[in-house]
Length: 410
Image 1 (cartoon, rainbow, N blue to C red):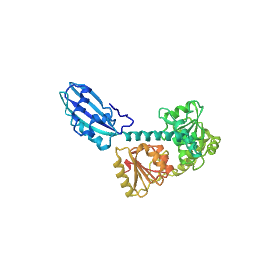
Image 2: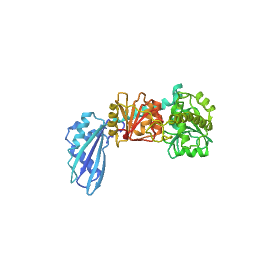
Image 3: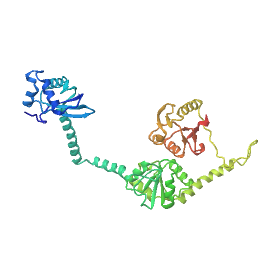
Image 4: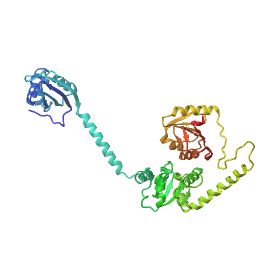
């Protein structure tokens, strides 16, 4: 009996069979040839087609459970589409296998050439990837690969708060503390591996712990926000040893290698920074004392520790809009970003609020379901935000140029 090579088969007929009894494979094959004999004429006689090699070896897989048999019939064919479909349909005329009733259902006719074509496509993709990797990259590709490897392979997470950091924190005696992850990446790109980020949180315990056993150098942006970070860390009792400022108006994440090394050479002892802060406060104290030297009539004894509060002028339309949006956010942990026309530019989760503020310009107001903290205020100041509106605030209005409103303001 002739056999069709699997290589030359064009189609595979896949059929399911169910038999109401226990039978063997020869019974099924015998029924296929016997019950289709003479059904389709001499040209499509299964025995003749198999002898000529146009129908391949019929494969039968059976499994008997509980006195009943289920299985699969696979017939390879090198006939054309129409003839293969006729052969497949003829299988469904088989109603008995031996003494048992049976039912055959053709599931699909598989075009073997499509499967081969898919294999060719996948193999071609693999060969192309290999070729692309072996081709000498241009200069830009080399630069991009190096930069990417620095970002992805060397940056780590350190401490309980999982702060972004370089790989050399534990082995370094001196640690550089920066504001955010982008600052750490820029320092890594320029060969500095002992930096760690505050990550915009209220002073992490990890930073306090490092300050007790290592030399901490604080590297801040060259703006008002950088000065506020210095004061915040000192007020929190973090043991800072040196302070470095980026060039005026620039952030640590954007300065060049030359600017970084110049700044590192110009670090200032923290004692000098504390003296500068004290000297800044002295004129304010003198001014406050002069202001309260002559108390007005019908005025209680003045509290010398009470700060001078600047009046915030907010229109009734703005107050109404802010109140409506704040009430809409209750329980959502979300934030609205508004322009100066009070149009909502977008809504983001509060976890992404700081990064969103930093990435946008011309933001007029930010309303969110949460508490206004120092890091949020610093980001808002550096981005020129006019209003911060939230449920409550840990920052007093006189401490920032951003206008702070809470739910109690309405």
